[in-house]
Image (cartoon, rainbow, N blue to C red; front, side, top):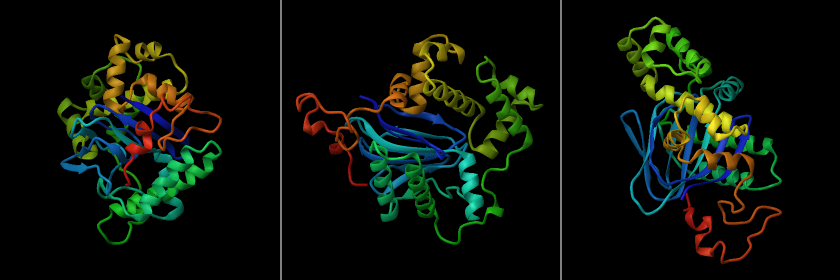
Length: 308
């Protein structure tokens, strides 16, 4: 089973509560990501040479462009996560306002009391029909500050002068810009490298040294981001698949699920209307469960969320 139970789009980016029943391949994206495991099958993530085991006391923090995956550690069922995709522009503005860097020094984020409380406040706001976007955005800001503080091993937070983001080689920036501008075209990594005046070997070395990933992983991430944008805007899945160069909708669906954990059809439904059953098992305002036989009490989502 896979499902997206709540999705919120704010000025910070996107927050989504999702249930994943399959592993995620190594991928990268332009947003900073914070992911907290809420329950279900145990899982871990790999970021570079580091392994981060999701648990009640450990979350995952990934900076922009860092390659990472998700591997389920047992077959006891699906895994439930809340994932925050934080826009670079929002982080940069926040960093300038607070004169500090908003980057994770380590992908392993210990979950303390402040982070735990903030996570549950965000969940409550996301599933509340009366919550405004500003409320969620403000709480996400608190959540992110708590997460970054928790991931530090000690010492003062670096000032904004130390750099909010990654300073990339100009040829790497040009390659990324080319990928985004030509995301709908069929192209190869060698062709992109040639466009920015690099050999294949030098191109791969730049991605490895500066982004800790490969050009192909990053290119896939660009395509996933574009797919998510088009699907969320109401694009027909077949049209999106063909526009992005996939030979068949089935290939597109498999690619999308391998990178996001859910199928494009489920993602599309979540962007339009959230599930009538929230992650706490409580019906949304104005909706009711037809009978206890339809959604047995022991299958309510609250039973799957462990105390993080």
